[in-house]
Length: 95
Image (cartoon, rainbow, N blue to C red; front, top):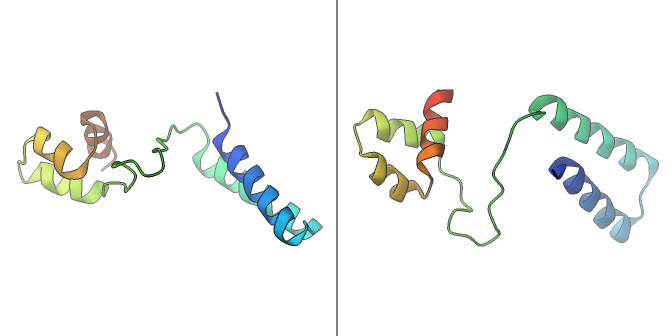
């Protein structure tokens, strides 16, 4: 399984180094950011949409819950927000 946080930090590191060099302070800061993200989100699974896909703009969990509580049909919520049934239930579980 890919460590997406590591991949993102590494890509940022390369881009900064190409554009500006990589001072020690920046290297240390990138390491801190990686640790902060992993501490806050470690173990969670996240969906990363393909760039340009119709699902790229993420549905607002609050709007999904509002629709559900307003008795909007699950199929209508799916099409309105461009998300799966599973995502809807995940949003509801977190509320």
